[in-house]
Length: 370
Image (cartoon, rainbow, N blue to C red; front, top):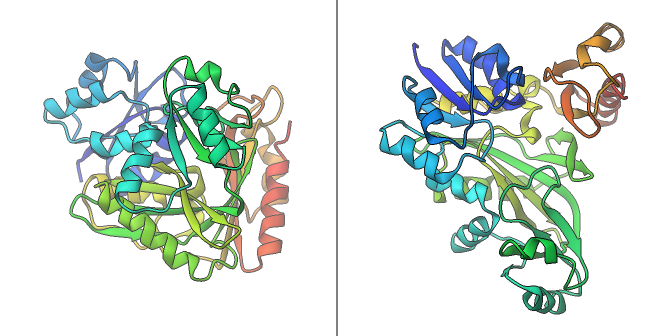
């Protein structure tokens, strides 16, 4: 098509946009933070995404700018908009994913169910919140947290003094939940929305470890989750993929936990498991192209993250044995060296029987244990 998409951020999400970009005939250019980033397979510039001049220079000859992460400062985004460069999602929407306090305010204004929350500015405020919510709370830094960072369970008013010393924090009730779910949708500027099946996610130490789609036994929750995600996408005027992370409470309710306005770990299963992957759909959406079919290829898909990886090596170093043992499982390396807790890749298995598919995915991922 001759279109050029500029992606700010050179991580694995940008890397996984490359194959569908090639298939669509779209040129992908990446602004990476460091040399040798995961997305270095694409035409890659290296620079500081926090510097307006650097980002403007990178975006000067692209048709649209999108993101591998949500951390680009609002003043940099404003410079892009001021230069007439389409930014998708728009800065106003992206701010909701950048700042958890803004997120809670905007979702509350839309009538979206969320945990009980408060903006807390000092120890007295946290004490009052603890007293009102059973003596325990989840405290989050408004900006910069991911994969369990910037999140803390507290039971005393002085347990967040270090964070409060730098500004307000978000305090939330400690939700009693059965499981965590993720609903992904995509929306194009013209307003069309497409949703994938609801997925179940498993977190370990705050990091997504495993995803099953569709979420087993979700029943009517699938419709509720889709309606919530579509309402959020429309209400916030999101362009591209939106991931809505949810709690299914012990009472059977859905509460929105977090948002991401980009392809998301909970949607990696769509590469093999859906007619249109989240990465292709994101490219379609930011170019305002018709959205693809989101239905599943197989009754069950299970994605397992490879965390840490083989000591002193990369995933491909162990490919021969893994590929031989599991020819029906798909392997994805992010081109990263091993480090404890680091996402270095993932595997996806599909099939008809949940227990069998899950066992195959876990066994394949285990080939890369340190």
